[in-house]
Length: 429
Image (cartoon, rainbow, N blue to C red):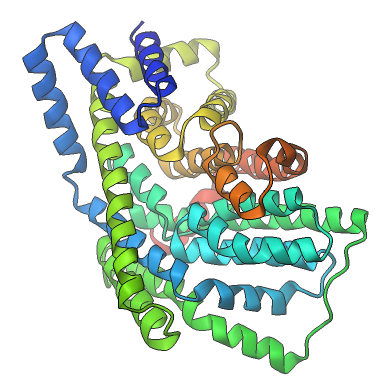
């Protein structure tokens, strides 16, 4: 009854166009008020919201948001696209492959799927249109490929999962995301090649080796950010929070000093956007923390665990049910609140069945990445449609085979824990 009451109130508030963070906070407060009294409810919710953001690890989020904003406006996207074009442009469906690889590169550097969709899509979609690709297919490729940056570190959503899980190592999560993220990119590329061969799209003219090496070399400083951040974290030189600060300094040197595409005026707008995004994320974390505490107080995770275990004690069957629930949730809820709300609910179930929290976290993030590309609430779909100047309903058909590729990787991650745990066990045991 608690879940039914909360869901009804929550979706009613969303239907009334109340922002999702306020909807979560209000639903929690109203339930607490009906369960106890006004003053204790207000005090408890305020305390839990404060405790929810009182975490040193969360300091990494504004740093990575700022570095991603600098990267998005600092000329990095153009150099990554040139590098991808030099490597893959001559293959069948070369432009589609370049789109996937560029989104993967940029998403991994910036940690933002929306930034990757906007920065890469604004250049690649018009190029694909000129080559004969439909706007809908071009937008679909951009939207799905941009989600790889949420799995490949540095990724803010992995930090949020680490906080919501109550102690999973951020460094280990960062390492766990590499192989699944690259598998998603590979799956999308395979479907792009199949599509190109069916439609008769050929690659561009093969470039001389000297030009290829030049284009790759120009992208090396941008790609070096990944190695600097992860190398420092794995070697123990700095923490993930300190890595975020290093990423900001490096991105600023690159964008303003080397590429010279960020001046003081543009930097001011970057800071403003960073503050706005950080405030939204932290307030969402605060309200979701209060909701998570309330659910734990009402023993919802334990009751749900008992309910699912009455259906089956097979871990794969339970994970299948959780995946189906998350796919449905992802179609109607943004990723950040979904992670914050449902991690404390589903992770205890996974722990009861002996499932590694690293595997569960990557499975959950990958599942919700699919939700970002699923109507009616898929955030990336709206950005991709705006860039390609098309409509969501027209994107559904070209999205279907790309969904198949992403779901195939999700099944692999669910069935084979080593896909997520191999690198952490090797490099950060």
